[in-house]
Image (cartoon, rainbow, N blue to C red):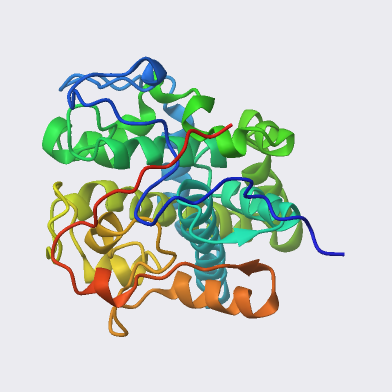
Length: 321
């Protein structure tokens, strides 16, 4: 039996994300952003609190030299990376943050759990902060702008900062109403620990090191690179009013996420590569899932949007329940 559709809202137009309405004072930090306020340049990183991240990096970098080498372990790391990047790109980003397609509640939970194995907190935290980024892209209130806070802060500093550890449900009210998503958000360590345990049981310590830690380090930094590199290096096709760039290398390595200027131009599209030569593996996988009926109503940029040099006028979206 198919799951019910989980989008009880009226879509008012393309190119928008469902977040609270923007205040006209561009530099003002709004009340609903009290758990995501703008940091100050040079804000210190809490190193003691960041020890788990440091330890994971140490295991991911040194660990492969402490176990026997096999090409099958490299293949395992690549496969686990691909599955999780697809869940992050197609699930956390294009579904939870931008609602660029629809699905049932069951597959929605699958996307949240598999995306949770990326160890980037829960879908509610991730998507809520991403919506905030689009609302204030490269302005003082942007959580991770290289222009405002520097390259290191935009890449990983904001992730380690204590001030961003809590989920603000006001940024993600449409999905925060689901108890299973709230549970995964509170217990965001469960999915990556389940993955780690499964890899260890199936392949021992080498599988755990390569499949969990090596792939995680790669996944983290290619994800973080969209916030840092894709707002610093690359080409600009559209006037989006921010520093977003199209970066072909990231487009390939991050399975389509590198077409960042395209994405900022038309945020509601499930396709980030607007032309056939812009490789977007996530879009191809979403098309396959659409053919199976697991997802539907995939949004793609119309020709008028792809051919326009300026950002489409944002359509208003009614406040969500």
